Image (cartoon, rainbow, N blue to C red; front, side, top):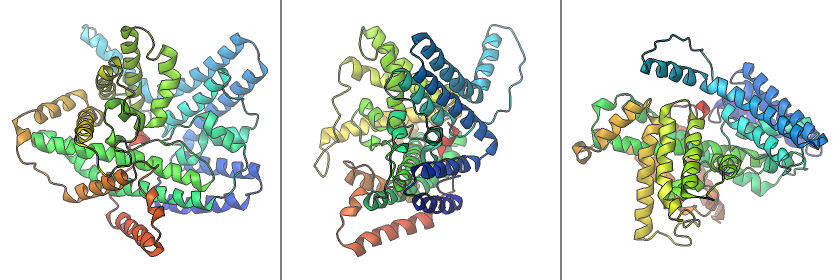
Length: 477
């Protein structure tokens, strides 16, 4: 079920009404959320509900096993069971054909021709997200950072919580699970700001991302026909497409959760206003980058030790992050590029310089900040080309055209409408960059008619210019 669909527009008010009807019964509320979440997920394909149910039950009993056992060996065995089951499912559905194809290619390279038959595997939507979410539970229980729950309904609801089930944020068990154990009361101001965040997420998704998508798809499919300046322009458009698409989903997810009295972590903190690549990764897909930081990077040693170990750990974390996105060498190279961009900053101990909001308390940034933001955005756009290209050869071909004399010609496409939408997005997010989302300051408009006029205009734009109703990009991951 898509957030930008009529189905969800009907589904959400029904669940909201039933949920708050039982405001005095916590168990009933959790049961309603569990049923609603399974219905929401099953709307896409009921067959794959068994995966999320099986994975959840395994981790529930793993947690109980750790609770009753004081044996380090047994606890470690239980943790390995959780890791094996969860990553086993993820590996099979997402990476089986990738490894098979590369295995065959490796033999062919050495002159040994072998035949193989790939499987026609459907990737279960959201598997990369809920796998990492439930793994955080097992790992944190093993590390004794979290008391395992005995309430199976709460645990199943935590894993399958429908607002963030299929594309995040990837919530930690230490943050989200305890919220299922506490009584929740309706907070009008929190709910109304949640509605503003949903509205902003819809604008970013259906107005910005979905209007940009057809142009980006056309040019990337026929890149040979376009000159360097056009390809560069389209690469910039894709940067805003993926941002509008993914951060739009996160805004809708977080806003929806707020309607039910839940607080999800911020997943995007205006990343295109970053002054260096380290700041970018503190602001982009925060739930994933912090997950890898805490469960992979720090256990490897983090930034402690020799320069060799630091470099190794950075490459591991970025390449694994790239591979998480998809079974394609383009994602691995995308991760490696980001590692290369990050390394100089880390080795010079500059990776924690820009931790505050850019131009905090000011209307505009200074010249130095503009140049830093521009350079960081340019590097990010170049890396996005590998993320978007169907294969590595296409990505390099596009880059070769961009870095040619045709970069200094006139673009063959001028998507005026899309550029206007992007400008609206940038302006509103710049104004709200010290807040949690791009419409938060609208609540401070004291004149009620002006505030409602703003909402009305935004809704009309969403209805009138709602794009091609594309699926969310991150559904494929």
